[in-house]
Image (cartoon, rainbow, N blue to C red):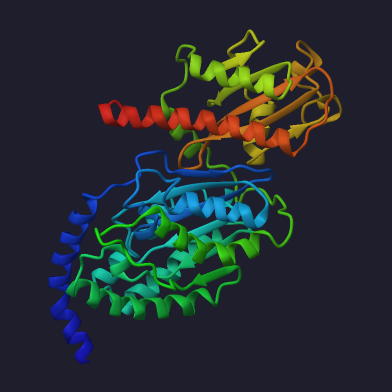
Length: 410
């Protein structure tokens, strides 16, 4: 009871201190590049880093130097595979809004999800009962939207004074509250198969200037990667496919928002299509986007058409597959043996396609290569096709960010 009374008195004060801390943090350096990190290698693991606090990257100007980059490189060193890591972070994430923020992301496509929430709740003295309900709801949501193989790492709330070394009274109070919230989190996480709780210790203090360096993020990544590397490196990954059907309305809305359909040819996309044919020694390549009932081809190599019927197409099958699709011989594949581009010109035999995604994971298009004879396909080829598809995605993201800056995108 005395603690409840004390918290009731302290919460208004902490709200003021929380605002001031946020204002101070927003003045610090922060990554300005795309919210991704990459470590090269075959058979890449896809990882999502979600939350606030450590995920924000205060103190450095690139995600490669912040926590995402260090996680990707350290994880790749342990597993021997590549890593593609996406970041969904926001200074305003609390346990009340975390599920809503996460619901915008297609979780099924990730091999691992790293959750870092609680900084704001510690500062705002969120009641224990509210925190328990929120964490339970959030983790149940994640559990219901990922394949069984997906590993989920829940990172403890770090001490506030590792986030901002200039805090004094507010940091001390929030740190004490964080200990209690972490205790609740550990109990909930330990009850869910496939989920792992990671304590934030040993502690890496913020620099004297009040923010972090790339060396600090390297230390923090080590805490997270140790249990994650054991899980992902234990056995070869099997592709269980997506969880649930494609949300076509959401996918189409994401495509429409990009504004790429029926735009003129652009050298940046032509260059990627050319690289695909050269690096993969293919006869044809296409950067295409999947509209309601058609494929619209933005760029291509050695093709003279811009529109293809969607029904029964290779691209539609790639999206339905949710990942890489390789067809060694379309003539003997019942899905494509009657396709007009198989039985007629250009008499496609071999096909390989990789989805093109938005920042939130909506698969809006495909980068494909194909030819008129069968051919071998290996992990190196997959890595090249994937990297080229990611190049398309980065171009789309850059265009979207530019549109937002100029007010051209609603």
